Length: 283
Picture: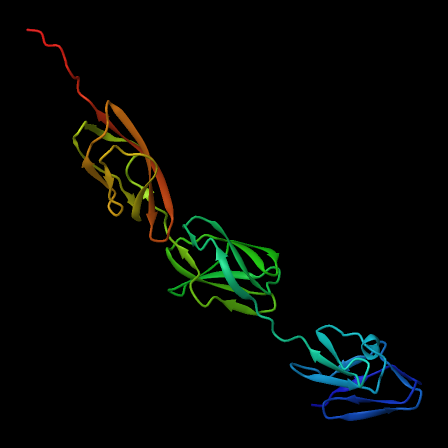
């Protein structure tokens, strides 16, 4: 590779030589000369190209202090205070964004803000959700927080799993290696809240609660009558009542959970009745 260093002036200083280009082209500076690079232009550096400048300089960091990097150019100084070598390298190589994680990872069909963490985000990138079937949906809006954080609002009417794709303004882009986002309807209760019914003291209980998309049910607060058991898979409440000493209403909350971990809670009650004991008879 042939590289050219264009300079404005050469001023006298102690003798030294400067090597320009990887091919070793040499420019000899007269005794007492110095190289003034004010307003200078470096050409010939493209892609991974490099331009090397070396000098028999014994003043620590002297060369580096005399040269300022331009846009997309990095300077590396080696052997400071000795036979210093400065390498100019193009830093305009592609810088692709990366995706680390998202939160939440499971959303419903309603518009939801998803926080995306990663690296090398540029304000403001394009963010897309790609269904496992291949369909692409752009985010409703994208908020650039920093080079490592974005907030994308998605409205995805089709349930399924989605890859995420982020494209910066310079065209550099990344697609997640796995489907990070799951869209699923949350459980929706079919059984109305409130009383499930009554059971006599010592009687058999047979009630059922149900919610669409639910794969599990659990009592998450309150308590059911003694002897009652909730089937975690079907929502059936069965058993023989025991333990009550008088007419009592038991209040409790059941939470339904779907396969994606989304939940919906609902409050219910069951009443236990006791008949009149030691009633007086008249004839």
